[in-house]
Image 1: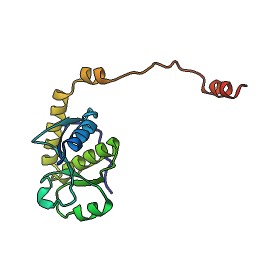
Image 2: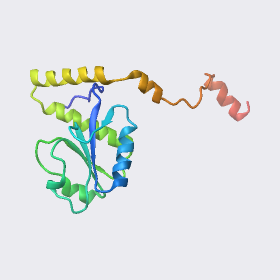
Image 3: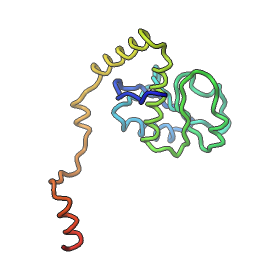
Length: 164
């Protein structure tokens, strides 16, 4: 049985591959909104690729990737064999579904490493990078609080709603 995915311990470098600038911009905006991801043009941990109708294996990123297709039929033709960690989503996927797919592909990349020293060394290196790169002040600065709502008695609130 597979182990559950661990808590994030590294900022993942994610690249976007898409033919149209508007699609690239949309995907980049969805990914940039997640503080666990850093957008990259090269040396990415995972690539998110928008598949075109006539694309083939040669057009797809060589490493770990999330492949987006317009229809389930396109996904069926996109599924390939091999050891490269991949996830497949429809283009209508939400930002949270996209983030989950990126994390799953990265988790599978780690699981593909040989058990023992190689995997542990990789994880320790990523943890070190995370500790050096994470900026809690920047993350806190990006947090937007719309309002502070004082605590109340939920039971009384229900009675107030029905006029009792």
